[in-house]
Image 1 (tube, protein in one colour):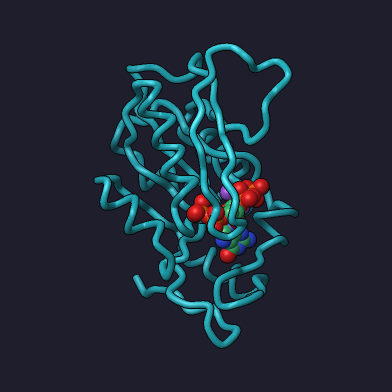
Image 2: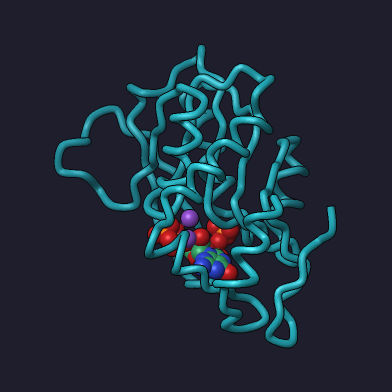
Length: 191
Ligand code: G4P
Ligand code: NA
Ligand code: NA
């Protein structure tokens, strides 16, 4: 997605060989008009597969997911990272190991909002090592839903995430694919 790559080059900051900061439009401040373009792009790419729900993870996955959900006219469910006061019954839970943070955490959804008739699109802001994506797939499958594919805003292609998810047979669409963050520069995979 050309406009996203442009935005990353203009506003992103390379913090290290591994980490890109995009706080101005994705991870802290949100650019709603631009986020709507992202939603439209996901809707186009996944138009033909009969998506009934979008599943994401709080917090940064929510904005792109809501815009895609608006465009596709389907509900959006976000997995929670903390136990909710009111969401206590019928929970499905998966563990996520973060290599970045070197810690395991639990994410959960309520069974109530996904069922065997659902065809799910999983959306997230970043695909790095794929652990969050795999946990979201696990939650959808435990609910008996079918996972149609994964929509990622920014893929760090030099990490393992895409490989792991594709090895399990899932379709991944990333709007920007980063080959390298070496030398303080963002280099994209040309496509
Ligand atoms: P993984 O799920 O793919 O294995 O990713 P990892 O554990 O490495 O990521 C932990 C958190 O860091 C996730 O956000 C993920 O989106 C984010 N992240 C990973 N790489 C980058 C990067 O290069 N730049 C930025 N900006 N974020 C990155 P999170 O903790 O779930 O936070 P949030 O959703 O509340 O933003
Ligand atoms: Na994030
Ligand atoms: Na995220």
